[in-house]
Image (cartoon, rainbow, N blue to C red; front, side, top):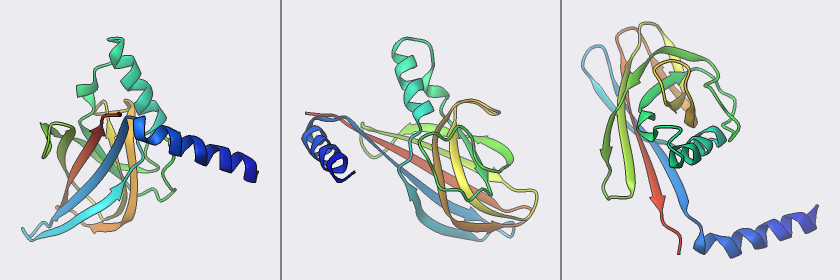
Length: 166
């Protein structure tokens, strides 16, 4: 087992300088029913899924449209993220259709979506999907609970930074 870990570590070090990399970040802002705004800030990083990467490859073949990845879902599931995820653990409410813009630089994709809640929940997960219902899960994030009640909203900002390899 140690030998396998050593080899994998060596391969990662050797490939890293030349690899194209993705880094995802998720930010949240809570808008309370009474109008009060709570800036939560950065709540999660990483976890682009295998299904998302497969969709990227399909897009190069004109089999999938990447601009479909703009739907924000949220839920109460608490199981850790995995690259094999294809859905949220326990999705609640209707997905928000996010805006799609370039982030602070040309290599950052940014989508902002606001979900309004009609019940009381401890929101602990978020996902970027390719459709308003079902669809492909690009990225799933699990984070510390954000408690909401009827009339509260969470504005999620998702940024995907794509760095070129050398």
